[in-house]
Amino acid sequence: MLARTADAVLEGTVVGSFSSLGLSARRALPAWPGDPELHALRDKTVLVTGAGSGIGAECARQLAMLGARVLLGVRTPSKGTATVSWIRASVPGADVDVVDIDVADLSSVRRAARHVLSVEPRLDVVIHNAGVLPKERELTADGHEVTLATHVLGPLLLSELLRPALRASGSSRVVFVSSGGMYTQGLAVDDPEYAQGEYKGAVAYARTKRMQVSLVPLLAHRWAVDGIAVHAMHPGWANTPGVVDALPGFHRLMRPLLRDARAGADTIVWLAAARPAPESGHFWHDRHRRSAFRLPGTKHDEHDVMRLWEFCRDALDLPMR
Image 1 (cartoon, rainbow, N blue to C red):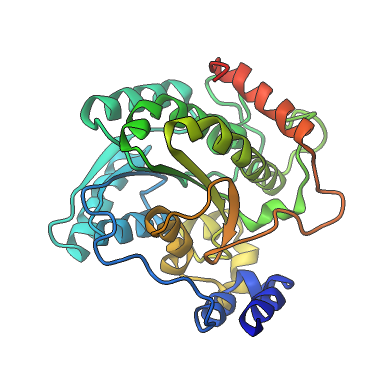
Image 2: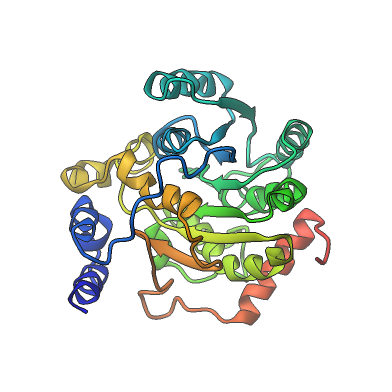
């Protein structure tokens, strides 16, 4: 009871929950879930997008330490090659390969999915970590706003195309790496492409991270027939190259309290490897289920989620089931 109360007190704040202080405090609580077993992912194959640096690279390293074969999804092959060398220096004998993919480019997603299916008969985990925070509104080659394409449309298409390999696992997992910033935004179902009003990159980022979280229960239901569990999580405030580049003011102010990449990757790795498997269809932070809502005016209903899903399904020409 005291442990749950202490965790709830931390969760009731922002700095206390999202910073490095929150993770350290929670680790000391009796209710902290145990680490995955040493070889929990032996004979398993994992794909991590955005694995060229930051949380994605560290996540891949930790997964390799647990015995997984790790596919690094990157849009810059040289960064992928460098990450492979970095992982192998830390994890001798690590089974790591690079998959060339730009998640915002739907043709690149299709090529990457075809490649993965051709070489991997079974896929056990897909981690959607690739992210972007643009300064100005940009459109992809497919005509979609770039954060929507990177955080929502690309990951949905990749997961759908990889369903045969995920199904072959029998008990696979898909993890969406969201952001605590999503708490500030409602579900922008009336303007998913952010075509109206003044465009702000941080708002676009938060809106599309909200979309990820809102779709998880629906996806969990859709993919359950294939034995695919679906999770969303947020890693807290992490000191990564992406934060330095996109939010320099925030980084300067909060740097002493930011989590390192290893801490940011913690719950991602736990969701990928924990036994028994965490319950599908939920939102997680620091290894516990969390509410997806903190602020008034940001809640949505199932009708809104279905409208968003229908938009995505039409944009990607996905089957009904």
